[in-house]
Structure formats: C-alpha cells, structure tokens
Image (cartoon, rainbow, N blue to C red):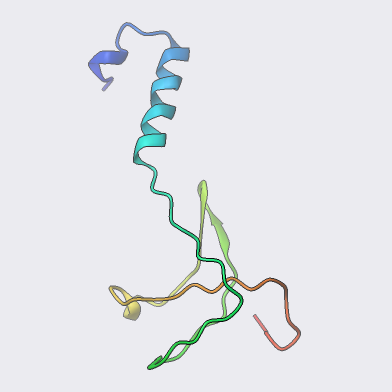
Length: 84
C-alpha cells in the first residue's frame, strides 16, 4: 500500500520521502565519552563482540536481563587480558 502523497510521485521523489521519514524517526543515541567508569551494586558482567544487525549493530545478552538497566562500555583497544 502506497501513501497517498506518493501515488503520483516519481521513484526519485518516493526515495527522497522515505529518506526524510528515516531521518525523522531514527533515534540517535547519545555517546558519553570518558576514560573511567565506577559502578556500584553490579550483578556481574559479560564481555561480548559487537556484531552487525541490519543498518545498525547489536550485542547479544540473555533474556533474563530484559527490562534491566545496562551499561555498554566501549574499550579503546583490544587488551590481552580480555578474552572473547
């Protein structure tokens, strides 16, 4: 089903409109840059690789953590002490 606005538009105009909608609805997540993080009362942690997921990326996590607050920490380089 095509949106009524697009019915009489060229394919170029349709693509422009789709990109416009993506720009409006795609959420940008703020990135906090720091070189140190202190967290209290943690239950544990996982070390995972970020993998591609469509036009974005994902980090796998067990379902038991659904709804919990998590921190995703990005390291500046691979350390020999960190095993994946």
